[in-house]
Structure formats: structure tokens, C-alpha cells
Length: 339
Image (tube, rainbow, N blue to C red):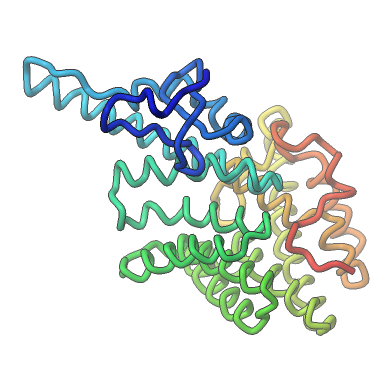
């Protein structure tokens, strides 16, 4: 539906959902979302709006006046709970799109996560950092490095102001900062960030966990780009060994449980009994596809390890998001070095 900004009530400014410029279009379904152009409306629809359109009306409608204080508090509690649910939904959706390589589509979901996080926790809360990180990584993927630097600066400043910030958040922050520095060609700074990523990931999951191996993988990419192939191959081999151990645990688990209960890594415990959620699963698979790692490490992998790695990457990926088998042969991380 077309809008004329001049027809808005006095003092009311309707702004685009994505760029905060004056809006000329309105979503005809929820009627509480506005856009400056059809292009931004389409990007938002693909990224997140299709999934949350019906949920936005109660969130963006002022709480009506009620007769009792108890009822008012009840409605405020309901609103807060819905906002927190939206934070979880939009964060996860943004991460999934990002891990699938849909950087442009990930931006609207991350922006929604950021807005809801600000509404619930305020401008200086560490709860805003995950949204900043998704926005930062999406900007790197789109080649908007200066914009990525702005988002990551916000994330770093918030983390520095939070002494008790969770080590897992610090790990993600340093990893994406490393991606930014690598994209800019600042390899020494990238390695420092990856070292910090590995340190904080090890605090949470241990040095031999698959979550920690991501930092090693990106560090190996930097050494590969620097021409230090022997060092890169040694690190790649450690990543393969870490995943090999995890996959062997999966095989052992399958021998004792019915196949019907094990359809994805989501259902399979990783090292330490933890479970990879859907977004993490997509990211791990995308980063460490057999063709990505083994193009660098085939000489140092045993045939049995390769077969185990290939088989489980091929058959135990989530049915949603990645067609089974289609990426096993061609998938590679956006940040992998080119041969």
C-alpha cells in the first residue's frame, strides 16, 4: 500500500524498516511495517518479515488503558515475554541465513533482533552483541567492510564494559573481528583475533571441541593465504582430527540407539554431551564440508577418517536449509582461501 508522508498525522514519522528513511509503502498484512521502496520491502520479506508479519501487530500496538494495576502488569509481562521470543527467533533466523551464505537476507533479521534487544535490555546491554555480530559478519560477506567495522566496534565496546561477559560471546566476537581483519588483508591482526577466539572457546568447551576448532580453521586459512602452507596443513589436520573424534562418537552412539531417533546432528550429542542447535549445525557444516577441508588436507588424512567424515556430512545434515548431498561436493566457506 502506497503512503504519502505529508498525509501522516502531525508529529508522526513513518520510517523504512531497513534504512530508517521516510516510508512510502506499508505492509498490507500487518499494517505496522513501512518501507521506502519495493526493493527494501522484498529484502525484508525474504529475510524475516514473512515469518513474523502476523506477530508484529500486538508488539507494535500500544497497551490499552486498563482499570486495574494487576491487569496492566500482566499485559506488560506478556509483552516482555513476546519480545524475548522474538529476539530468539530473529537471532536464530539471521544466523541460519548468514551460515547459508544469504548475507543480504540476514540483515533484516539481525536488525529486528537488535531492535527487540534494545527494547527489552536497553542500549548498553551485552544482550545486543549477538545481533551486532550477525550484522558485522553479514556486512563482511557483502563487502561492506567499513559498515562491518562500525557494528563490531559497538560489539567490542559493549563487551569491554561488561567484565562478566560470557566467554562464548567473546569467542564469537573475536572470530568475526578476525574475519574482518583477514578481509582487509591485516593478517597479523587477524591471527591475534583468532588466538583470542580459540582461548575463549576453549574456556567454554575445551581445546579439542568442534566449536573451538572453528578458530583453528580460520587461522589456518590466514596461514594458507600468507603462503605458509605447511603450517596451514598442520592446523587443518588438527581440525580434521577433532571432527573425526566427534564423528566416531556419533557412530558409537548409533550402534546403541535406533536409527529413527538419530536423523541429524541436532539429535546427537557432541563432545562433552552438548548439542549443536540448528543454527550452529548449519555453520559447522558450512565451514567444514569435506571438499573444503580435504582439498587442503587429503595427503595428511587417513582413508578411514575421510570416509567417516564424508559419510556423516552427507547423511546427517538437517533436512531444512541444505538439500541432502547437494553441498557435500561443492560447498565451501566464503572465507576459505582460494587455490
